[in-house]
Length: 253
Image (cartoon, rainbow, N blue to C red; front, side, top):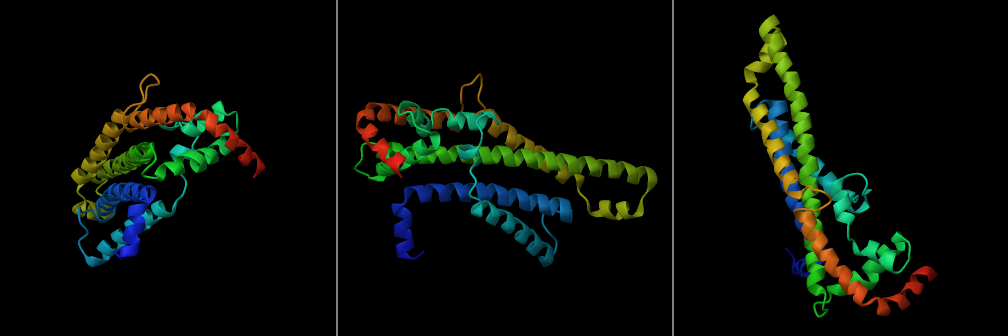
């Protein structure tokens, strides 16, 4: 990697943290989609010829590229009423706290939070620099957990649907001896397909169990994110006197 790129990455904590999240989530997506494509389309844990291998890789690569270019953030931009994960993520967001304390619209409070407070914490000499690093890391940990939960839930649903169809087809083939089904099942390994479905559900269950809120209490990555946000809000409350004069500038923009 060229030195100037390396220096830029080292100096940009937010970019490093976001890149780490993208790489980790892409790893899960690459492995899972590749296996699903190979097992269900080519009836083999590994494609048997170079053409199948290339098709699988191109398919997975396209999905991953779409993930990287997509800017929508369901946790940050989503409706807290939609599900408990978004609700926990928004629970003590500093921008919401600022909107309440300084009596300003949420959208303006978001700008105020990032430009007047959070971005200034990037300075390593700032007393809240550790909170800046921790907030970024824990925020993307929540995104990682949410990505795994949603992705593997859909993997389980799709594989369960396909396995049901395959199970019906197996029964039909045994009863009616349909020729084209017989050719398919010569290469089909139903055990791999069921195993894939079960594995998807296990990953989903563990990720959901660890991060699901109970009686309104956030858990897992979301609990850690909420803890750092509460500390950030304490600092904001302590410095409200110095922050209030800056509010007028945002209404004049």
